[in-house]
Length: 289
Image (tube, rainbow, N blue to C red; front, side, top):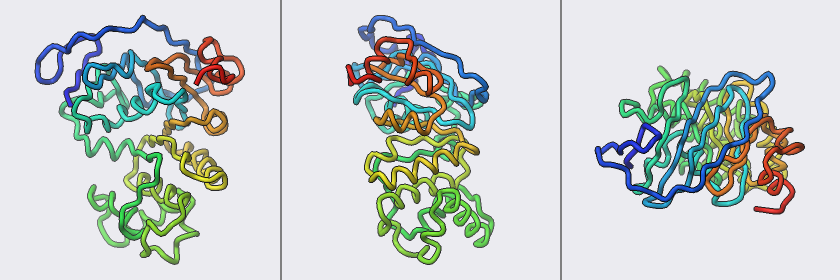
């Protein structure tokens, strides 16, 4: 992937000029300040994304507060998952993808050429829409990351990390007697919590969740939502969801995307009870989407 670190029409990493692309009309994002919010941990400025000649995101800028849940909502294809994948450079795996702009974690540019992407993805973990446990035991699923990152100096250290991670994911009591059974043998909701435990095990600072409950039943969804609320005490969390009800339940900040643009962002309660932009209001009330 060729990545441009400067947002304003610079060159890609090969040194060639970025191809000209028809720009959509400029849009001014509505921003409502967060009251008593924690300081921003992640900052994005003028982020645009192209797949070949097709532009998927237009100049997205947003601050993500520390130790809080930020929800991205919007219709299918609006760019919210594309932007989420920019945060830990998952789009690097797509040959035709170019990312312009700046995304920083603690003021470090995440697209700096000197940055180790493997280390970045340890700092910024990701939980996907469909649970994807490794074809290994429950224990080995959680132990895998700490092993490859050298986080455990002994077998006892590793066991402590696994147990602690499973407890944080609210799963330990359910699986403590079968840690060496296949992770794929768990229920869908348990598999998703196993994937969360796997992400936690490497000590991330940020956890990204791309529709983590869309494949789960209501009971499993409620358990995951309760877990998200507990995890925000220690982690910065960003969640993409199609469920406005879920965003209202779990997040403190909400950002509404539409047609590749960030339309409005602010405190979740305000977004749902007093949206400032007509497009946001139309989405909330079901007129678009």
